[in-house]
Length: 262
Image 1: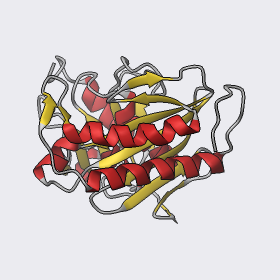
Image 2 (image 1 turned 90 degrees about the horizontal axis):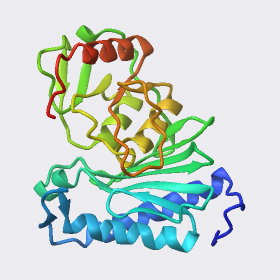
Image 3 (image 1 turned 180 degrees about the vertical axis):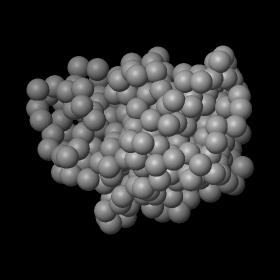
């Protein structure tokens, strides 16, 4: 199906199918990758990132939707539907054989995050969410952890804080989309971005919608809206299974005296 009219609507079901087609195309393309060399060291861009992006863009171009991609920026910005794409989130993990990398997709309709799919490429799992209809992992509904305090929590980190924040345990796994999905299904109790405005919308939006639809807490540490279509925007996501733990993580991060990892 091709949608080139900016006023034509997509149903949620059609968007679910579209994102699944994109994830399939990327998985097939990445399965054949043998070149894991870095092509742009400043951007941290691998040859495999470009292969994955080409596969995703081929499906999305045929659909006629707008795109915001980490690798190729924004295209077709006159469309009501824009798909936010990280073709290969965690590409450094993939290049080193660390099995924690994904394709992250989120369809934004008239400024609202409507449908998300995060495909765990190492394990073949798929997290899906539709606004107002919950979140699933491989078709089974998911719910987050009930942890309410830092001292009882296992927290996923991006970057590292300037001091110990009081968690029970922490993990730094290197793929924000999957880290957020791990909060959504209770694998992690919380997630804290300790870096300073390091994440583009493609890093977190798919995982954000999965978290929200699973019933988890997700905010930007600075209180900014997380949904944006500007490729230049950066955010600092914080997530938790409960609002109590989320508030504790936000408060702990607010105690950083200087921007870490700036």
